[in-house]
Image (cartoon, rainbow, N blue to C red):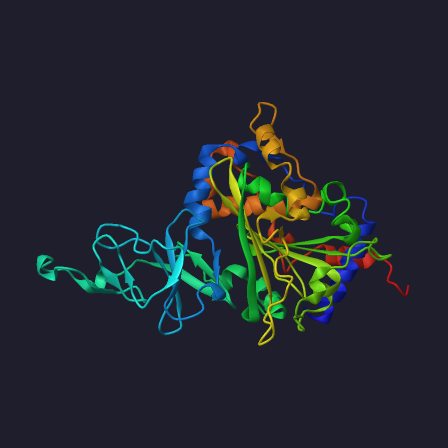
Length: 427
């Protein structure tokens, strides 16, 4: 992040703190239709389009570190094998034998020179090509060259491995857009995975995710955990193409209230992280299901997955800078306690009302969600979801009005002009 961007953010923080209404020209946000959290039609549209066409974080290089290493992944409802090839490439395939459709791999992870289906012993190389099969004399005319494992698009951002089920989707770099450049300072190519866990929740996945996509709730839900170290009134939201968003919230001007020492101080430092990442909560929402603060000590994404229309799963990751030849750091998991068996305090606060909210939104009394300006990232997500699905495919009563126009999407930001009316520190 360059000096101009940092200065603009600092000015925007003061602009946000001083405003008495949303910025001039910012659109009124119509209610989000309640059926988007309860209607099976919208749930099916999500399955067919959002989870099929988006880039999804599936694995870390530490989980398939050497040639022959593989890992199963099915968080998006599709059976996938992620494989480290002999040539060093990371590939993904549907875990479906091209003979009779049996799963080729049944172990959750492992290492092998070949992938052998346990049903009829059809054998595949690590690049997915069919190497051999029993009784070839009984398969006259079978063309091995077109009977390999069916590939799934797989690309890396540093040590992170993403998959996409849509052959027509943009590249991962295009999908991330300007965020890919912003993330260079966090050195994802040198991050190590130190914690990955998953927990079941009894609510629609968007209810769980949206609790982590705004700061409006911070003074109430996180009064003793997050609120003392984050100034929600000086929070700056930025909307990006493809439904992504960013929030940057500084600490309180008078410094944080007394709290326990941050255990992350013992972790290796990412020296290239700039002033904002070190002094503010710098958090990104990557469409469709990634939410993560990033700083000079930890890279800890949260991922939210559907597990039914009224059930979901939250996946917690913690990554830290490569510690080299030294010992693995003792503090290795930002989100959980008891060796990953339970959520930590902040996530317990965020998820405590999920089941009760789900019951409420299923009631006759729930019609829709009126969002504030502070919650605009949620509306931006829904508006982008409709665009990806195709508005014409969505029942009219479940659509959101596309009121956030491109002039509010990065790199455009009308606030930059409006804040010029604010006095400078030396005025």
